[in-house]
Figure (cartoon, rainbow, N blue to C red):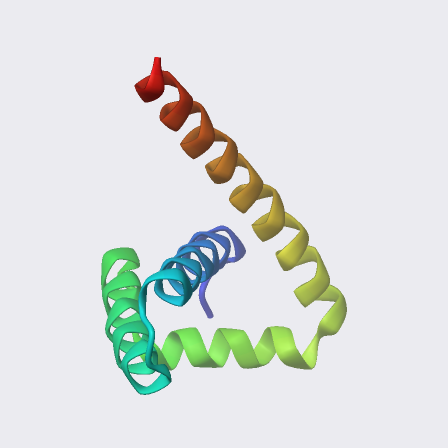
Length: 94
């Protein structure tokens, strides 16, 4: 199973990729194709196979308390990333 810390990083990356794709790709079929490619790259970057990711995700789906804990950390991680991006954007505008 993928360790929780790594799962947080993977899912945070996946949600970031989803948000970028949603705002930049017009057609649903294209979005799905781009998302699938991005997800493969994210898993490769973290050294996790699709099967290990799916098995771990299924574990969290079957253990909703654990999933809740996982997503609390993911939301915090995404908030920090957003704050850093906003700070970087405002410093570029100055």
